[in-house]
Image (cartoon, rainbow, N blue to C red; front, side):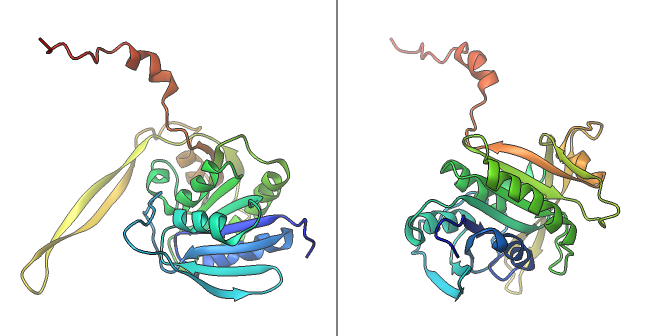
Length: 263
């Protein structure tokens, strides 16, 4: 391995043992030196959470000439932070998070641990990809996602991304023959309509189990990630770490926030 080979940092939120991560590592390892830092267990839905209430522990799982794998008792954002701060002597050339078992389209980007890892890279201005497959099964077929993710990965590795921008990439569940291609699109406006199943434990205590369904608020739109997935396209949504609503700045400035109750 040449010293100038790209350094590729890989993480996920399904755990270091997940088939999606293993498929991703096999895809990227021909392109450089691979460092995997991933949670020791599944931590889906952790978004950009970081661990501050307990110490973090890095445990080496395996190491060869090209791929080094660590597990961490933390979140994807923890994994990226630790990797950058403690494990490397140069900034990674690219960060890839996934491949997630389950879609992270639309508003799920807010809750996604997969995207939490990618966005942590984005904050550090490292070209970063979050990749997901719309299939929660541990036995999911990643062949279509791998084949077309590789094209995206190579392009970003070669050309980079705009500053403080990462990509939220989602693949449909379909065969190669059914796959229509890749669409760069926007995030669909939608919401998870949550319900809590109220239950009683053996000791008579009450507990709640989260359930719910996704509600797409713009089913008629054909330029969204939700439409792409439902029509057998992969969706690419550019995501930025700056949450500022620039279009609303003037309106907010014109609101009266003056405290007129002073005597």
